[in-house]
Image 1: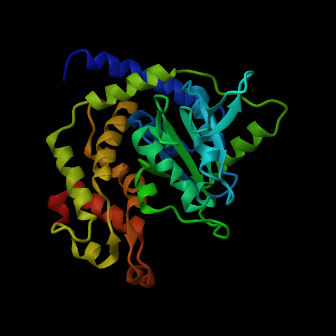
Image 2: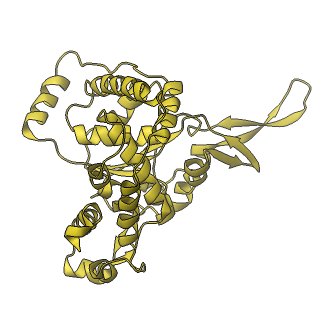
Image 3: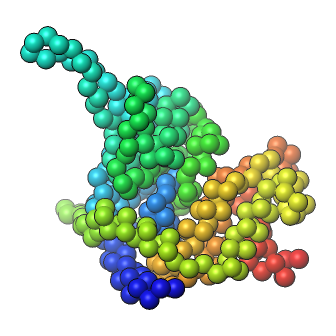
Length: 333
């Protein structure tokens, strides 16, 4: 490790603690959810928040936009939403002398943190409008490629129980989300704090702690953090064990999984483990970091077979077994 990394990591850790405290003024409790959201930002990735209505998913994303100093945009996904409503479109205009020309009007995707609210309510055609933006940080409209701002993140929300009027996200779309973040019900003490803080005459407001430029610098710092060979091996063991057609996959994966994670999952685990270590004040990731991120990284990149679903198999339980196997292969052998 170069000498300049240690003070920079320590300083960034202190700033991130301040940022998380500011987010907590608007999104009370649910520390694990907040940490995963920060992990996605530090990795330069996108996140899919899945939770029931009223759990604060939108509120969290709006607070993150304020705290991180990012220009935010929002799209409410509906069945009649069109790609141009997200990307923008060209309009024909006439000047004072009657000359006509096209002018491009930017859509809400031209921001730094896009909230795609209830993303599964739009048609597959509209969902696909985000594919290029999420992967290449650019959009192509009328044959012209237009770069997006840096940093650029998509934080999408999805309701897991409302199926009428929704469209499942295709695998190519899901794979572009670095993390799937499950937002559970709060515990009793957290819910008590929520109702006391949000039903009075005044509510606490989040304040800006970092800037977009500082976030870009933090993302570059995360990529410079060292990763031990044992952690690299653990990541490869975990990802490859979850592919049913891989020679290293155990029998329960081959019997239960119809498709598994690709190389993007390994990239996400590598970056996410670094970011998680940084937020904990450590200079390098540990095996526990990889294990903790196994479900958020792999859960949306795998699917149980029909026979496994009929048997009542659990995908989270399967991923947990594979994560334990990769963390301690000598015990799982």
